[in-house]
Length: 167
Image (tube, rainbow, N blue to C red; front, top):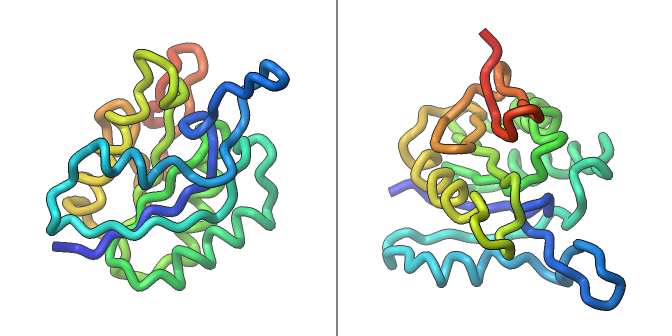
């Protein structure tokens, strides 16, 4: 079984309602460890969780992307899942791909609807990404909506609220 690391970057998937001001924002720490408990992962599926940053991906800068790329490259894990906002996910995937180790499998994942909101795609996408990172070949991929896409061809189709691939 591949060693797996999840790196949290925030994004819609992690947004929570903030009753103090009526906005969506981020908790002080990532919610991913709790999600993994809820998912009832098999004990042999050992996953390490780290946080790069918890921000809206529209606020991500080249410095954030370079920090993330450095974390992925320095990871000892065979497979890395990056939980990321969907708006700039492909930009970060390209930065990570340029720095990842040659035999490393990296899968980016996000959600169109926050995990906290009913009918969210978040948990399905995260579970799919965890499976994909164990089965996909080395490289950088995007796991959204039940599809594993090439980071080089994927784009966010805002009209249909999904990720597609350029032909």
